[in-house]
Length: 428
Image 1 (cartoon, rainbow, N blue to C red):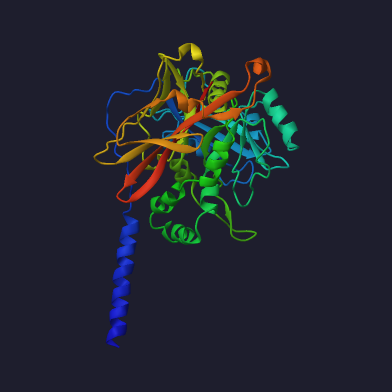
Image 2 (image 1 turned 30 degrees about the vertical axis):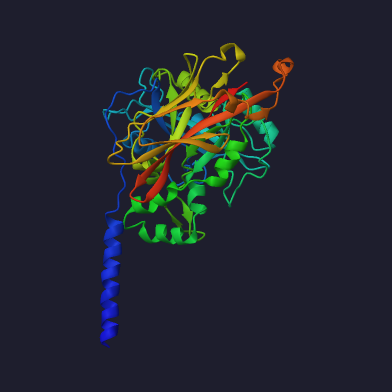
């Protein structure tokens, strides 16, 4: 009897300790305020979410307000097989930083920009179209892709390894972008024990539940690394794929997770030379082109906004950034090729490592400080043998190497890959 009472007491103490551990759990990256070394305007965006126009539970106007409170710079919806939000005139600028509301389409008011994309069904899976002006009907992959290109949009392979709706042909060509982080896939692909932890802890502390989403999607990253081609690099982005509409029974649905929570977890950051102009048509093109070109990176902003991130290659005094191809010809054989990267994380509070990957293989790490890496010319000769562009056939076969950055942060013994850059190609 005594031992049973002790067991009950021990269980209560353990449960209370676990409850308070979850209740007050928080992980924050501490940043410094040094001079920003980035040459770009960094705009953070929430990409790929569903509304009442398809199978989501939220009204776009409400979600725009939510995104404004969360200090997003742009917002791109992706309802299934419809561009009705655009047709209904909802696109425009909203939620200015001072708390005022500019209203849709107000010229000169570059606050939060909202515009509609479309997630289109094909025989291989879902293809997201960003920056299009006219609705595209579901159909064959090649036909849908052709229509996106005609409209000068960016084509995105959605959730390639989602067990529910995966992309069925990873060898297709012609698309621009791959969703590397897709939060719907992140939770669907969890270890069952983690899934139970999420369900159990969500109502106690949603941050604790959502931090489990920040695991590294190894299979998708391997696909991404293998998809790079000479001057046809594939951009990687992070998307929420938020629905907030989990079906429990035929008539009952559960609004889980909340849009406001998923909007906070992971974002795609666009790097522009200038601020948005306030012209809706022009700014949509700027964002679409930055995504298609790979002039962006993505991160788990759940832990803090990535202040001061920069990444570039210096080749003979010229700078090249993510999405660029660097022609390392023999005319400059005496010039050094140097990679620079950094972020304004305070290493005393949040230890971090900047990792450099070449063709998907880690080749260098810089612990808790900015990275400077000189590429030995012989290393360039060990790149992939790339396909030859038709107009450059006479030049022979190119040897390409694709370099990208990952930043790991440490909270005690816990490591999280916090930020992923896009690739810079070096070819000979």
